[in-house]
Image: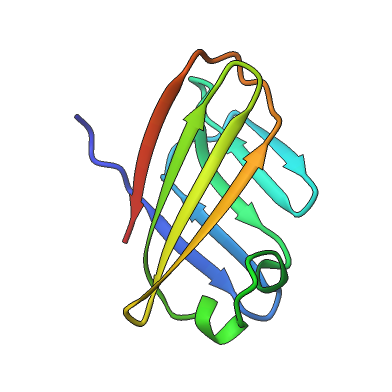
Length: 115
């Protein structure tokens, strides 16, 4: 199995959080302040959250100090469900993001760890 080159990037000035698996993006889907990048196989390659502090209900200082993150993506026939867990200075913050996007999948779950 190939190693995934994950990254966590937070732009404090623009208040944008970007979590990526480092895979080549084929398409992007914008749902409000959430931009979901899709790879050539139709799976989530990255997520960009605009106005992150407001949307995740976290202060910018905390977002700037994310140590680790994981993203669980559950694919269903007519929607995807993204569950983020952020580790910030030994505190965990869980965030659920249900999105109605049809990527053509049957039931599947994917766990991605960001370091």
